[in-house]
Length: 384
Ligand code: ADP
Ligand code: MG
Image (cartoon, rainbow, N blue to C red; front, side, top):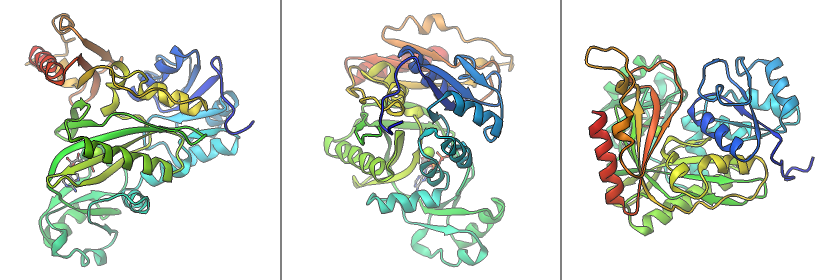
């Protein structure tokens, strides 16, 4: 098969991982007439319960990967820690993986990721690789105050410790089990933003509007799209995202998280080789969503129109909302929330609510950003 022959509706598309990002991908694929086969170890996973076929097995199970490869010419991923070796195994069976194993491998390691971003000509925070007690000596005064982050497997602010000097650094390194870490200078943040971009095998690139993101306890809470920034900064952020996706020779959807510093400079924080939580609003607010874009990119089709047609404010719905004051589980009363005009409710079908677990999200749409924000505040107040 020619690398860029379109894979037409009616064909199978493969998916590694069964979380909510995979669920929304599967829904977009089904809308366009594709059949989705997901490989995921949990039988109740959000994507597994909506995909047409579910191979219930660990990601590295060779029999399961072989079965996926026999059905699908192309396979995508929905979380960053899909083992790169599993993607290589699929590629060895003739499958086009979007993204490729190499891109996933780079983004799985914060140090390699930062080195790559620098090589693409994009700015990163001053940082050091800390792998041994010997490396601690390199942490000179200008690196502090800093954050020590594990190089691998960190998410939602986990595996990170703030350190103010070399003594605290040594303690933090000890506490993180002396695993491979990155020491990163703490920067004065004005805003945190993200840019989602897509690229197909022809090398066409499409970039979504910039999103402005607010976290609570390390977890994304609110995203405002488009970000309230000077046009010049917005354009620079979008240019950085396209430069990175091109340099990675990436096919699929990639999110670039950036910091806007108080002096207007941009610094790339990290990459996610998949659709991103901050891009959920593209489903309701843009002509083509990040998930439809993922389908188009992996199927070698022209990319969709990323134009935003409504202003939007997205609220994550965490499991906390499912517990009453006595810690009993109950379904939130959605009827009042759904009475807000322009509000879209998305729930992921997770059977077990847990505190801090992402259960769904709300997107508030309006003609102006003030109105969208007002609706989001109303929804938040109703949900308590
Ligand atoms: P995760 O992979 O857990 O999302 P991040 O590297 O994105 O980890 O860090 C989590 C949060 O910590 C960021 O969203 C930001 O608020 C803050 N943070 C991370 N690095 C820095 C930095 N160098 N300077 C200031 N704040 C930072
Ligand atoms: Mg992050």
